[in-house]
Length: 250
Image (cartoon, rainbow, N blue to C red; front, side, top):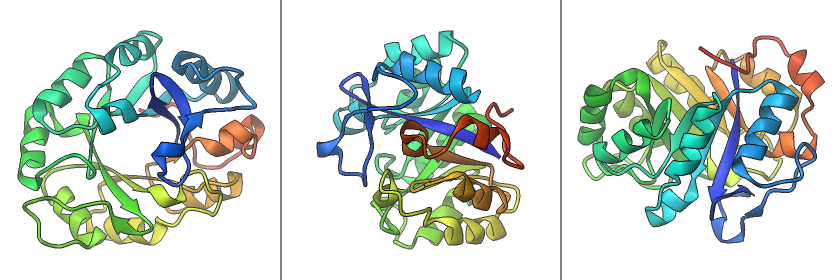
């Protein structure tokens, strides 16, 4: 299972995400790095934990349509493998992020408009370069596709997998940064039963290495983590001693 640290970008710096309340996000304060500069934080994840795959949530792009392409290029040039959510709304947006250094682009439920166009995106850039993010808030999808009637998380996830997506993030924003545990595992199990060959990643609420071990036991593809690394709740030694985890990935 991949351990994937998160860079939440806002106004060009890394911020601490808490419960999806973006108006209150502030530059990250971390025990592993004294800076909120994206490259400094990325290097700290790699140097401290040996983690080279990053999830980049570009809030400037998601909220204002202003992607931080130069930051993507800088991170990619330093050898980081990047899963980037740049608020995709079209295939052209995806192509631009890929050209700027994304290893995979994330089509988030929050911004991607149509199930039918998601299927076209997969055909256009390849299933290996697309990740869908099933964005929840306290267990409820933040929205649904304009061309899908069901508001149920399992129905949305199943429809996405049927559209040809292989990699999916199941993320509950309400759990991010609040230290109350990961709430998405039952939904992940249902999606895994529906599509056993899918690569499922979850996140939001990791408190300790014990939480990571529980997630690894579910045979998921990866877990997103940020706050627990910045606060020291999860240490490099603990990550190194976990069974079934890998910081680098394929």
